[in-house]
Image (cartoon, rainbow, N blue to C red; front, side, top):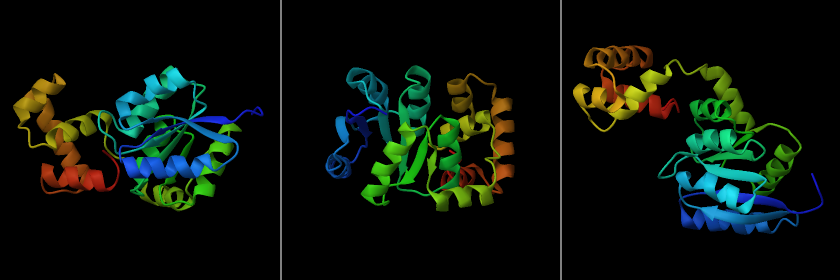
Length: 205
């Protein structure tokens, strides 16, 4: 790490939360919040435009989730460090964030000093994970849903019928039925709506 300030991008859709985080981080003498966005699909362009060292990404954002943005940022700007922030301490989110290439995973109500410390530590090449979430993720085990089962459940969440799901995902209706059946079985749900709810609560979707 050089003597210059760390250039940080803050991606958070709630304006008051974003401004509060920016203000707190700006109190740190070695951290400079150079860009703020409210949508996940604006993350990569802002990171490139402002040449950021670290991107702080909320999970729940319009346009693209923080986890999806993390994956895209990792592929397109591999030198940029990624810190994922969440309001919801769901073990499945932690696993998905790490799989997407995040360097750190923290809950939003962590002290500002802890967040600033995480920014510095990821620049040193460290992984920073909220210890409570790490323990919960180990206890929970891996996400049992395959990528395709997650895709089908995600589309089914809005109440779409099998024919619509099949058309949107370019699958046959029979294949959609099979994926939904497996997802329902793996989540221990009674129907697709309950499977969606359980998967979301665990952070699998």
